[in-house]
Image (cartoon, rainbow, N blue to C red; front, top):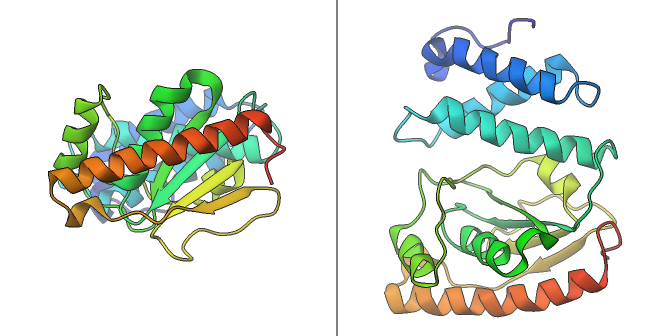
Length: 223
């Protein structure tokens, strides 16, 4: 693969460079015939740089960047019609991707299983998930596991059938043929535990209604 445009030492790339290039090689092999090698490498390094802007712990950052890049490349291939979308794609967007959108994505996965595919992102992602959000989801039997705040990228918006925003204003680009909804929800960062539980329950009601609509309109037919 060609060398990327990032000089050694920038944003901690010097120590991660070799690891990222190996990740790019793995992903290039995985996406052979779908996405070019140069695009794969660019997405990998962009993903690392974007996550590094807010990360407070960098030990697992290359692995997180590879996971993020894989999802972005999948979304890119989907948006180009190169990969089938057997189920509706839902994208949840809030400001920091540390509370509301993470809760919505987790609750959707719990309720819908593999009948939908879910992504979440933030217009200004935080360094980590809110502890209170983790707690109230654990109370509902949901473990966020290895989830982390991710920046909003154009590829995931293009791949989505439904885009749900939560307090992020006009940060999300608008494309035709998608269902756009804005859920007015309080920010868990400003709430006590009872308030976060109330937001969780409100999100669940919204999700149940959304899933009923999407299952009546399969992937690619949302309006």
